[in-house]
Length: 581
Image 1 (tube, rainbow, N blue to C red):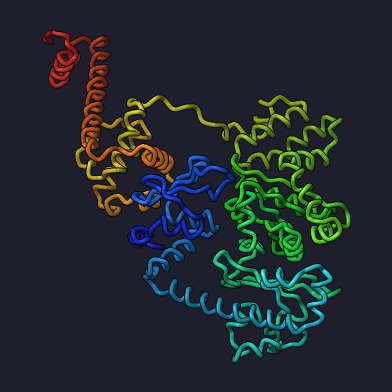
Image 2 (tube, rainbow, N blue to C red):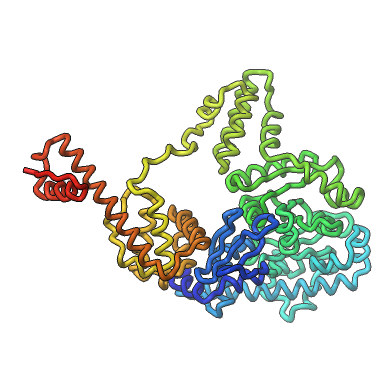
């Protein structure tokens, strides 16, 4: 586990403006920097970076975060990989208390170097293989596209990699999945007589290979086994090459084969990626939804293609949010994306993509296809089959739409469908009782503390209402500052400490407001004093209301001596003379 102190120090050293400018050109706009948002399509810049507070916020789509969040969202890196990337930029070594993590990093680096050397070997072999070059030309692949994807060739023969590695018997070659040691102890190359497709990580490093047999033969595609570098369920082929096109169009096309990706790129469709010979996983969908607002799965129209699409649908439900969409294209029988674009051109596929079937339509159509909706039994089965899918769906708004359509198709009422599918517990909770203190007072307090953390020492926390989420956020902010948990409340470190908590959204909103309307430095102390005064007045009103209610129920005699004094003081403050016996 990476210590918080290391993350704070790393974020303190990283300049967010320099980091983001390396990916998205920024322009100075007043005190901040701006650009068109890299996370959604827009024509005028709404993506803003604060150099003083070191966070970004998009006033269009709401994207918000620090350096770690940017790399995770923009490059699709996991949390640990984002930390490693930033630590390298800051010239820091990720701490390792027990040595295991350091050994893992060293092993991964060694395997990465092996994979890179193998990729160069296969690439050079392609140049010298007339048969492999002829095969790619027949498939319409140009030299430029072959270079872009780093295509190579594994020659026929059993130990060709011995020419690339001094120690062919090295256990690391076997660990990398390049060499196999059979039961007789014989070593031989895993990939032989195949066109090689390097699988590249988000960081641009070769982590695995897919090999396509020349001509006929089984298996048609052979993938690297899972290794310390490579987990099939997490990776897709072609994402680094497709990232710019995906970002420009805000759409990613998912196909099944490596050659499909290459063929689409050859015909000007650069936003395609491929799964790795297995069913689409939830982790792959989640990775792709970080890159684009829309995923279109493009599969063959046969039974196998529809089965693959259904698995993709099932594994998308838990990560599909209201801001994202997923759709499906089923190609004519006998066609795949490669053959379609070679016969009809890229425009034909683009038209199919534009007309793709939404996830909701595909889901209901597939369920209805297995039911006889003309019978009571069939309509009952429709709702029963939909029940587990609706329960997994994260998007509450889409779930509501599906419930309405299920009610129409099944003859049940919407309430009956919700009850039969046990969806009542997933409904939005009833609004909480209004907090004692209006948010309009507490939100400025949050902004004041974010702009000038030193003010926290002068805030009487006992005046904050206890039943308000914003009040709890203010209290947490003050406690964090007082504990010295972050360096003078560096906002990037604070938001990292609160990632995933109930306070994260409130603080993000306050920080975004502060970006637009910072307090004037010369007037910030007066603003704070005014906020504290209003808190004190609010507390006096609350205390008086409680005492007044008690007096009405029990009379003055029901008050304690201390309460009588408080009541008298409150009456005086309200300009109502009186005596308490």
